[in-house]
Structures are given as C-alpha cells and as structure tokens.
Length: 407
Image (cartoon, rainbow, N blue to C red; front, side, top):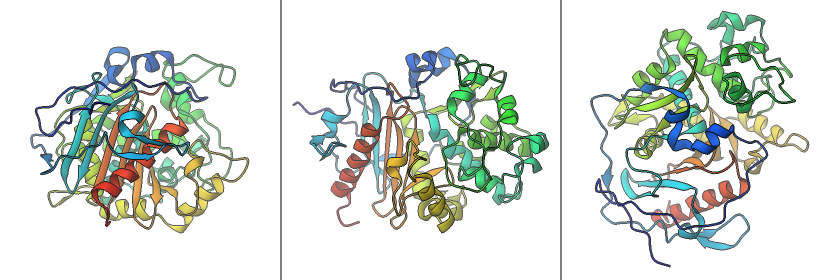
C-alpha cells in the first residue's frame, strides 16, 4: 500500500485516509443534527461563542527526523496485527504526535485543514477542570466546598451537598447523561425515559434527583461537569468562554480562537467546545509539562500530578464502579492501576499516563516518561466504540515504543 504523505511543517499536505468499513454505532445515539453535521460543522447547526486566543502563540517546532505514523504496527482490539494506515478508516480526521516538545507527525484527511475547528466533545471537560483548578489556586473557590456555596439555587436540588472535588471526580450521587443535556437544549427530542425534558440546561441541573449518597463510586456523569462549568461562571461573573480564554487558552499560547456551543446563551459546558488539532495538542503539552508553558505555571502542578497518579479514594471509587452489574461504558479501562481523577482517565498511575477522551473519537494521550502527546480527531458514527478506543490505545503504546523505547 502506498504510504500517506506526512506533514512536517506549516506547509501542510492534505491527504485522504484509506477507506475501511465503518463500525456500528454504540447504543447511545447522538442527536441527528449533531451526528450528521459531524464535529467539523458545529457552527452551521448550533449557536456558538468564541473562546478568544491571545497575542502570543506558543510555537510548535518540527522534529529533526520525520516519524512514519502510518507505518506503526500494533494489535487491534481483536488481537490481529494491523497498522495505523489500515486502522484509521474514513472517519479519522486528523492526528498529531508531539515528542520531546516537537511535532513528530502531523496528518490531515481531506475532511479537515490546520485551521479547522473540530468538536472536542468531552475533551471540553479537561479545559473546565483546568479552569476550576486555577480558580481554586486564586482562592476564588474551595474544592471541598459544597456546590451551593457558589450557586445558591442548588440548595434544594439533588446536587445539594456535593463538593467541587466530588464533581471533578464524577462522584456526585446524581445520575445524568449528555443526551439529557441535548434534550434540555432543544437538540434532541423527548423520549420514553424523558418525555418532558426541562427547558434549558440550568433547569435540568436543578431538576435532576439525587439517587445515591455523594462521594460514592465513580460513575460517568455529564451533569457533574456541566455544574462545574456553571460554577466557573458564577465565581467570576464571566461566561465560560471568557473564563477559559482568560485562564487557559490565552496563557497557553493558542494559535486560533476556539468555540463553544450555546443554547439561549447557556453553553453545553461538558462537551461543547471546538478547536484546531494544533491547539488541542498545545493543551496536551500543557498537561505534559505539569501545567506550565515556557516556564509560566498556568494549571497548578499539584492538580496535574494528582490526575496522573491518582489517590486511593479515586482508585477505590473507580474499581467499585466496574463491579458486576454496574458496568460503565469505560468499564474496559477499569482494572487495578487505572482510575478517574480530575475529569481525566488514568491509564497507568505509576507512569502517570493519562487519557482525555471525547465522543466520536477525540483523543489526547499523554505519557510523561516518553515525553509523548498523541492527539487524534475523528467523526465516528457513535460516541463510544470500544474496539476503536482500544485500538487507538494500543496504537499509542506502539508509537511510544517506537519513539521512546527506553522510557
């Protein structure tokens, strides 16, 4: 098979991914207008607000030697030998590999260009978590304070008593899903489970009932992150877009404005952001470098360190969540040494390897010992396709073995 041209500088070559069979969608469908538009066309189907970049751009320099990402061989989820070239299919939009601070490989399909803003989905959660950590460092909030300290209306809600730290670790006692959020924002129709959805995301958060005690087992809860985004707005008096711009996007040196989806001036906090591939990689490098860029500390280093290495409480909460009868859709990652902390998936608490994952195949994989950041953007037909997720995780490990065999 002919090799795919690689992009090693700002003069990027557009290439088309090899065709492959499309995986079946998962059980949780996306709303039709968002699924059909794909993450590259959010501005065309929903309202958005700009997350402004600053005046200084952090450079991304090419590596001295090119790296053949497409030729990397690994085992797919079925145990069969394959290569990235054969695995990516026609629903992968772009990939960028950063090694030791340099761009080892930058690749785009014909769907996307270097200036395209691509939906981040739940990678948005990590930008919110970073903002919360910075606000805590600035003494604007306390991580162990209950959420009603900052949003008094929550005093009579199911979230009453849940702390900011519990929300960061998805350990509130309130079950919620992104589909409920879509329904409240008018982007998905009512269904049997939710025949009369609240009119608005804030109204949904106020109406969700408490089902178990706060601080129990981990469960993937969209509402926990949505509430963190609302807290960011309340403690600053700014929109979330302006908070993320001021605290993270500008200081890290983003090259382009990002976007966030809106409905009636309220953002989809937990999954509504969109950015370029390069700026997503810059954010990954920020976390690789313990929250610092060019010697300037942006995200508190202790917050990043805890996400990388976790704590016993988070590990226990995650393992309990994967017990029989309480399977998570990320249950495949639930094994000793793997956990969820500070809105981040931990793949190896000894190495400090972490994963930021968003629906439809958005990845930022960070391995500190190898000084490696792998960023992938996709438009899968469903939010979570286990064999595709496991395949990419195996591919990232193979990339690590190639670029940093002694790490």
